[in-house]
Image (cartoon, rainbow, N blue to C red; front, side, top):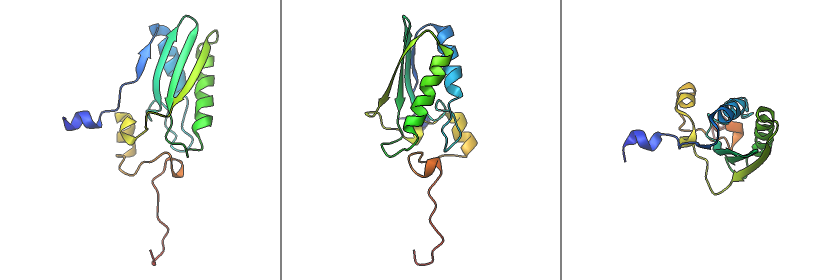
Length: 137
């Protein structure tokens, strides 16, 4: 496998009318992870968005079962889609079968953060873990 392919984030799966998808994606760009401050789109937390016949199906990837912000983020994403598409029934799922990893982060966010070798949103609210200054360690 080509190294550039290995580091490319997975594609977001989209289906539906272009204008409604664009409104929805713009709304989701406003949903920020409270620990990192980046949008859930940049972090790769959105797996898919499918729009059809007055319904929206949004599937999110969770950073881990221990992430305290997953429910808050999911609620904010639901409200963002609801505001963008007010006459739409919204079905939100969290896909626990897809494991979040730093490779899901957008290239633009990687550059802003200066790389992601220690980036783990499921711990320390998105900040790299830091060891206490203890000479005995």
